Amino acid sequence: MTIPEMRTSRWIEVRESPIHGSGVFAARRIPKGTRVIEYLGDRITHKEADDRYEDHDPSDNHTFLFIVDRRTVIDAGVNGNAARFINHSCDGNCTSVIEQRRVFIESTRVIEKGEELGYDYEIGREKDDPENVDEIFACRCGSPKCRGTMLYPAEKPAKKKKAKKKVAKKKTAKRPVKKPTKKKTRRAKGGRGR
Image (cartoon, rainbow, N blue to C red; front, side, top):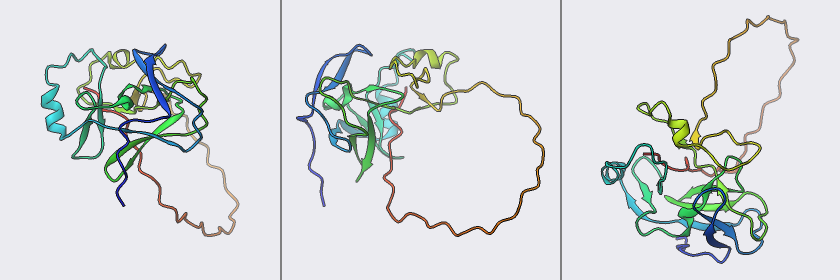
């Protein structure tokens, strides 16, 4: 079954954001689990994305690139829609969902009218990242759960390992664990940093 394209959405409006630039806000109360909008733009290969943004300033974190899979990237900077203005949030009220090689933004909780939408971009780290990459991709979401960066996973300071004491455990019979039968939806890695 083909899913109709969601270029626009009655659920949202774009306006200036206190987080960063333009943002997307609820135009009305959005129920939990609502498919709000599709992330649209040019569908290109990773190589085309690299070539297209070869001269991109490495200290600029602004990107509209979204990884769909190993072959495809959506560049919402070309033929994109309002979904490209949804800002990053470490503790967002939305999530990105990939279905049939398309990306949709869905609400993870009730979003009240006027509230800004956000989801975790989970921009991947790369081996050749500059030392100040966390500063370049600094997060401004303001959440108490903010990890300080849009990059994923967040770098954590190395902890010293403590020697563990071995404690004899009482053996008990284990019951077999029933595996869930519901297929888990694949989720996007958020965006693609340059």
